[in-house]
Length: 180
Image 1 (cartoon, rainbow, N blue to C red):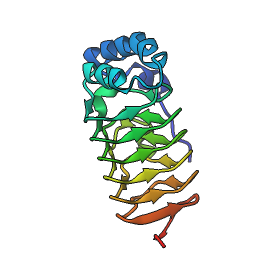
Image 2: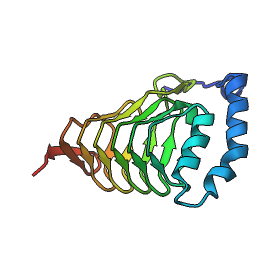
Image 3: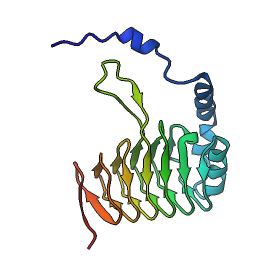
């Protein structure tokens, strides 16, 4: 069976409001202020993110090489950290809990498409990283996933389902086990 997809009609559909499109352009224009700030200027980057609607707690460390798509979809609680070259693809809400760590090159992806619909409409399921959780280097957290408090998603692991509090998730697909 072959499905006929009206690609031109799909491309004409307005995915974002005019206000969101303007905000995305302004964020892109301000990115050099974020990216080229010296590494120890944590407060500067937090201040800049707040100007774009992010909810940033106290003493949050976001490295200058972090890629953030839409800061107004971002909430980072007190004492959390986001490491070098991490990607916060915040098409939908991303919440990083207190004292949580998102290590270098990790990817939090709060956006996907409905593959069941031939038009492939954009979906923006939220991501929640619990307090004291650790997303290790190069790990991937998919749309709609909750990583529980004190949970650890191991290096290069792929979480396309929730990881319960206190568990360690490793591999692709992720396998959860108790911490030892």
